[in-house]
Amino acid sequence: MATNDSGPARRRIVALDGLRAISILFVIIDHLFINRYGTPPYLDYPSIPLTLSAWGVELFFVISGFIITKLALIEQQASGNFSIGSFYIRRLFRIGPPFYIYLGTILLLAGAGLITEPLSSIVQAATFTCNVPDSECQWFTRHAWSLAYEEQFYLVFPIIFYFMGRKFRKIIVYLTIAFLLYPTVQNLFHLNGFWHPAGLLAQKFSFICVGALLATHENIFRRLATGRHAPVIWWGVALFLAVFLFLNSSFYLPLQAKWTYRLGLVILPFCFAWIVGHAARETGIVARLLGNPILQFIGTISYSLYIWQQLFTGAWVHYSVNSWLLSFPMMFVLATLSYYGVERPFIKLGRRIINVGIGARRLALPVTAPPERQTLGALENR
Image (cartoon, rainbow, N blue to C red; front, side, top):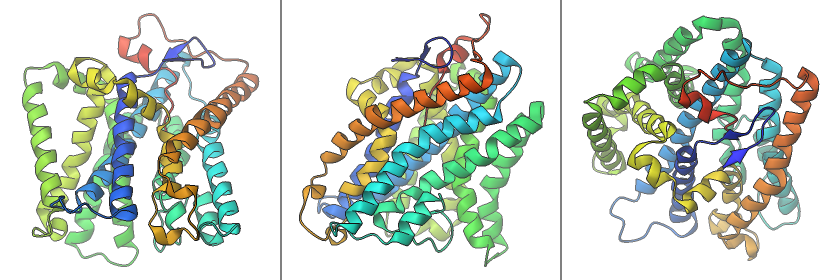
């Protein structure tokens, strides 16, 4: 799965594409179960799909924080510098075109009377503010809340990385601790008003920061992953996820108001980071399972699929007439067309613009760089 960047051919991390596929499938299954067809009667805990959907997005956040930080570290190591302008161009041409084409489609369909979506909702989604308090984003743009978190992260990250220099590794530790602990502090001191929604924002940003933390401290993760206690950690992660899923999905144990739940939200990002870190190493049974061809294809188109699935998984009430929009397999068709017809061409265009503006700078890695650094290359992510 080689891709051409502004330098030599670079290989994607196959297992991370597999994780992306699982993440987006969690989201799709939840939307179909809860919104389109209702929860199956044999499912004891109706909120299990909802929890898995949230986990899918949060796993995306960890992957995003990891890859973006890793790429920045590679660029800094290879060239001795980090270009803020190049970072923004890459993100703009990676994220913007597919998303705005989707919003344009929603605008046309709403105007034609096929779906119901107010203009204010589309405008707010276009400005990546669907995650703010009292958001007006309706169903067909509601999923833009996750893109809002990532875009806000992308807006601030390069500035911090550029100006902090070698101190960035310490800064990301402090930010991670702050984001992880803030919701608990807010609840402990009963901070209301602005402080309450700020706690919700901090909770999501903590997953991105833990991903960045993984990238800046891979040496520590590598020692843990290859040490004698690695199997124990794997069993601990699996047990925690199973118990947390059951408790969080049970109507009989309202953990939302308990300290055990808040402690779980502190541990959860590190469980995902453990999984992402192992996938990035591309060794072991996890990497082999994630290399399944079907997962690979879904993971490759995962960004476009995440955007377009919202159009085909809404409740019946959101559609004004009976049309092809009610056929959910069409999401895979449009996502594939979006990936090959929009994503890839605009990514290449962004690279050409960077090459022209920076004099075709190459980000070739030193031959002495560790193998993990040589495999990341131009990994692109939502």
